Image (cartoon, rainbow, N blue to C red; front, side, top):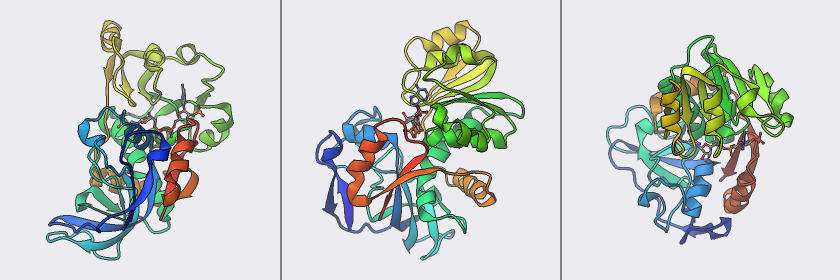
Length: 312
Ligand SMILES: NC(=O)c1ccc[n+]([C@@H]2O[C@H](COP(=O)([O-])OP(=O)(O)OC[C@H]3O[C@@H](n4cnc5c(N)ncnc54)[C@H](OP(=O)(O)O)[C@@H]3O)[C@@H](O)[C@H]2O)c1
């Protein structure tokens, strides 16, 4: 099978196509023939050697990629929920190597869900990592309630535009930061109030936030400033910045880091939202697998609206 490999950490140019044996599923695993693979910032961070997720994530040779959609091609002993030919999507193995940028992936069946009818493979591949992140923050971590005020800081990104929608399904009032060009489309996805972080000071542009979801690399302090006493700040990209926990406690606020986990049950819930049209995943662009480096260059510009996907 073909897959994208890197023999050293570095820029997008280290990604290249290689041949590898097709993996065999062991008991409880399925093998998926991948038709599309989502691209996420963690892929670019691991490629560059700086994800901060442990040595397993950076020891080359390595195949990045955790978002896959495709067709079940073989099932191991004990698998009852999937059969050969089923269309599935998932975020297998994270944060261990999954080999998502490759033609075949094997993983425990419960790390996958069925792709709903009417959802194409590219959209399905764009969904798992970003949607599980949004779900596990909004639902599992923050347990957002009806009428709570939620801030999604970086609402126009892959995770952000889904966090907005999932918070809306919980009945929240959602404030989001994004470039002005994204505001109208985010409003159509349910965003109640948009802040242009290029022209407005986020720390002063809103207040009384119950749950702040900070998806930016730098702005934990701004999000904390607008969080009400008793409220919760989730620092998503690289944990809680130094000193912020102490400041939060002094102000009577809560702050936590977060790392997404494979979760077939949550993914089944996400699939239901997709099927009902309650969740819309924006695909900003597609690239053939061989052009993974171009996809990384595009994502690293830092202004993608939605998701990038590799097609196989
Ligand atoms: N801990 C975890 O489990 C986990 C899971 C998923 C993602 N993440 C991390 O979360 C971050 C976001 O992921 P993603 O997939 O959504 O990334 P993405 O799709 O690349 O989105 C980045 C978005 O951030 C916006 N942005 C950049 N700087 C901003 C700022 N200062 N204020 C407001 N918006 C800003 C940009 O929109 P504009 O054009 O509007 O500026 C861009 O659309 C990444 O660092 C990723 O690694 C962590």
